[in-house]
Length: 438
Image (cartoon, rainbow, N blue to C red; front, side, top):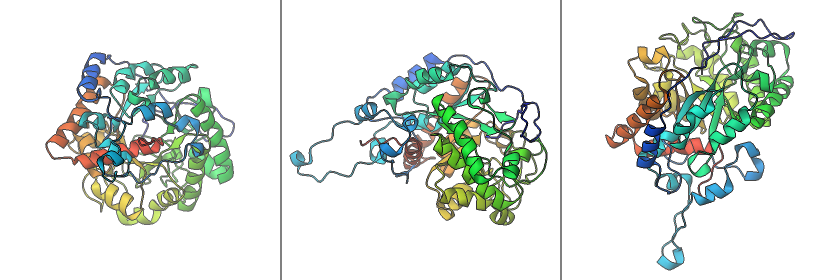
C-alpha cells in the first residue's frame, strides 16, 4: 500500500529521511454487529467459512516441514475444520479428490467474503480488530510508527479468535527508510534507494532477513514490500511522487535484482513478501492516495516496469499488490479494478498464480473513478484480486460490514461469480499454507 506519511529516522548509512506522522486512529467497537454477522454466516461448524475467489488457487500447500512455523496453520484446528467424509466403500461411489476449493464450496457467501478482507488496525491497539477477526476477516493491516513491546503477545491473542484457527495474515509496511511501522522492535533498514545504490543483492537479502526474523517473532507474517517500481528520482516520496527513495533505482536491471533479494530476505525470515505496485508506479503523474493518477503508457511499462515483476514471479513471489493508477493503454479504470491488468496481464501473460492484493481502496484515485470502498471491493474481486485493503479511519467495523455485505449481495445478484469468490478465498488460504483436506 502507498503510505502517505513518513518519519525521520537517523542512520549513518541511510539516504536522507523525511518526517513521518503516526498513522494511528481510534475507532468504535462493533462487537455486536460483527457477532451478529458471525452467527448469520460463519457459525456453522462446517469446514472453514470465510473467503472469496474462483477455482483451485494454483498454489499447492507446501509440506509442513518446508513451511516456517509462523506460517503454518494449527494442524489440530485444521483437522477439526474438516468434516468426516462418507465412506466410498459404503456408498459404492468413487470419492472425488479433496481440494481446498471443494471444501470452500461448502462455506457461506458471508464467510467467504470476510476472508477476502484485510482490516486496518492501530498497532498499539490490535484488540480493536477482535470482532472482525472473530467474524472471519482474512487479515489485519497494522498502522502506526512505533510498535508496543508486547505486540507479539497481543497478536497471539488476536489470532486465537480466528474461526477454526485457520491462520490470519498480519500485514505491515516495513519497507525501510521513512516507511517503517515497527523498527523499534525489528531494527532499522535504509530507504530502498540506498540499498539499491550501496548494497549488493546478497547484502540486501541478509539484512532484510534479520528484520524479517524479528517480525515473525513478533507474530507479523506479511510485509507489504518490496517496492519494485522503477523510479530514479532522488527525492522523498510525496503527494506528487509516490516513489522517490522508495524505489531501488531508475535502472530496471538493478530493481529486478534488488527486488528479488529483498523478497528472498523476507522469506528467509519467515515473512510473506508482497511485491508492489503492479504494473509499476515509476514516473506516475500523481500519488493515487491523494487523487486520480496515471502511470506511464503501457507500451513503456512493458519495457521498463514489468521486468522486475517478471523476475519476482520467476523467483516464486507469493503475493503481488496492484496499483490504484490508471494505465494508459489498459483501460480507463484504476489497475486494481481492471480485469485487463489483473487477469489478462498479471495472471494470463505473466502466469502469476499467487495472492493478488489491492492497494488501499480508500485512495482518492478510487473515489475519483466513481467507486465507494464497498463497490470497489466487488469490482476488484471481479477483476481478479483476492484480498482488499482499506485505510484506518472512521468506523472500521461498519466499513468492514459494508464491504462484506456488498460482496455477498453481488454474488446473490449474479454480479460476482461465486466461483470467483471461492478462488479468491483459496488464494488467501494458500499463501498461509492452509490445507483444508489434511
